[in-house]
Image (cartoon, rainbow, N blue to C red; front, side, top):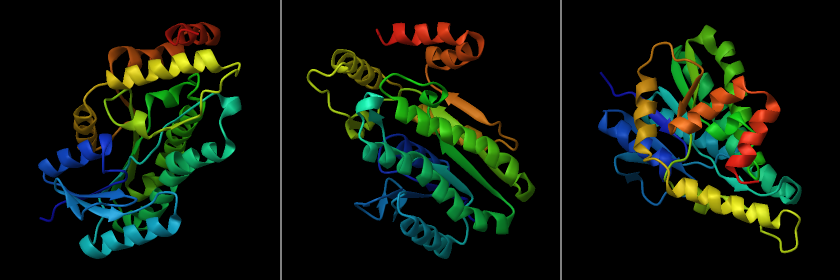
Length: 268
């Protein structure tokens, strides 16, 4: 029996790399993507050149993979970027850039693999979102919006795909010790800005959370566990107890109470 084929976007570092390496150990044939792969294979992950913001790049990579292996059994939409800044002061072109990567990019990759999965009447798509997508966070509003949009889109997609025996789910990580803080776009702290003091303090707090984040291997293990489920649920969360509990509280507390809780957490 041939190995099942997994396609992971954004697999050159962080959570994507951890997932890829773990699945290789479990016997899957793993293809990862990067905008500019340094090698054809790293740690057992075979790499394809793919830029999620370029539909032509996506189409070529998917076609190449199908030509090589004849199948794509799993798609793990992991490619993404972070962004921070006061909403009022974040440049429009940076907002568009992160939506193109985190949201529209994921949708384009899904569209590229669906015809193949539909022809096989099978497939499993896992969208890596974020616990931040469940709430509007101060100075991370755009990032929250991109991940929240993907969460809701997955809910709709699941219903549309059931006829074709294609599964889809979200897995939302909390803070993990990765290089996302170094790679995200930071709107500059502007001297004299009305947001200067609070934004600067919140940036330091966010970086501290990432530095103290959990090992990405926990995400890899969760993704593998979800892949084994015949009837996966819609939303999964991976993070420390408080981060997951904060989502439950949002459904329980009055809106203003929850807002006060968040502001206290971010010392605002």
